Length: 363
Image (cartoon, rainbow, N blue to C red; front, top):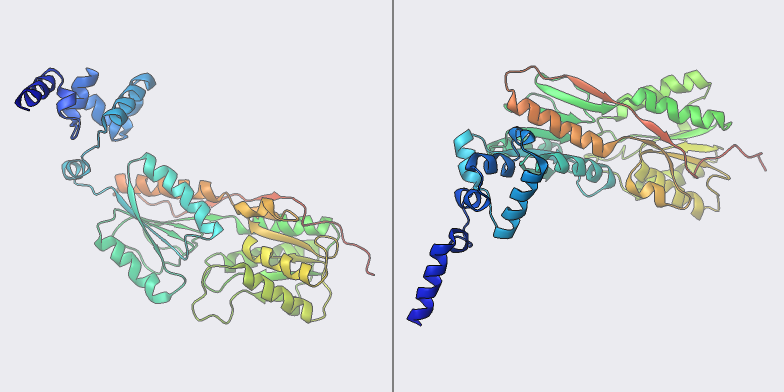
């Protein structure tokens, strides 16, 4: 048994990497690669200086790190730079399509830059909207991203909002151009001959509701479309704390529109989720989409392209908006004394699929 231990000890002396296999240090990894610790450090910590290092060298470092199970010392990095590399993200709900697509973009950028993040869901509850940012800041986040969440005041850390519109000192708002989005949707329906159009207005708690509705009012005047109150329904208008959309609300409100007995040939929904529920309601009522009623959604969530029929929608580049928010936040974090860009407008795109068609003669 003693001989075995002696042989192991000698093997360890011959190979510094082998002796440290269970706890490989940065210096040990650098010696193994015959590179300087500084070179290995900038690559492993995704430092901007890594751009000057050839790609094949970076690949060699990362491959060796995986093979030897090297883990960067996060706490040492944080202490040396006096940084926590933590970001907070607050959303109504992270599992539904809109927020999930945005979160994917946020994750892409934060992980690439070596940041961790906390995520909290407030589900439209006002007390949580007020309290969660403070809790995140208490946990030493360096900045906060708000997804479709109202903000009434500035924070002690940089803040970027997605679908935010309120001007608050130190806050950058990223939002789709709602006027253009409304114009694209109604122009498409008008060209198909639709004049009798029903509308799902957004939730009282959504930051985009007011701005998108203003865009619809302007576009309707442009195309000579009358907005009839009996064919306009606000989603979750009775809810004390409006939460994220679910298909059921689209289903219920579509049935309500049909029960009015008022004829309409198209529905413009506030989002894809409510549009999906409405399409099911029309089908259950024996109506064809788009033969009897055309449907246009908003967002272009992943499911929109796989429905029957596939959903025509106004696309928000949700994943790209998430990446942009993370980029803006990290720039603000690294340049605390710089001025915050107050707003960034993102351009929408009309995606025409199978749920819209020309007006059919009334039977």
